[in-house]
Length: 80
Image 1 (cartoon, helix red, strand yellow):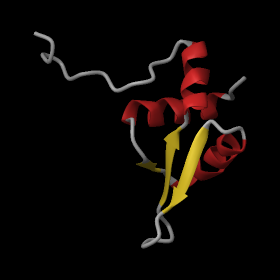
Image 2: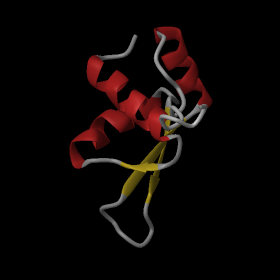
Image 3: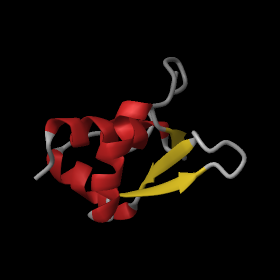
Image 4: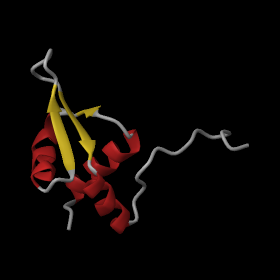
């Protein structure tokens, strides 16, 4: 079971679909999700304040079980 703030963070990162810089207030939540192997966190080696995260396959599966989007939607007009 995911807490609302954990679910929101996973959704945001899943929609991005790539390593995304975390906001300062998201870092603690991301570390909790990393312990459960739902996220992978990486520190920017050139900027000590830069913390990035990406959703793991296990995290995508957790979102899929909740019925949440796991990939970025194509832009409008793309399929037309």
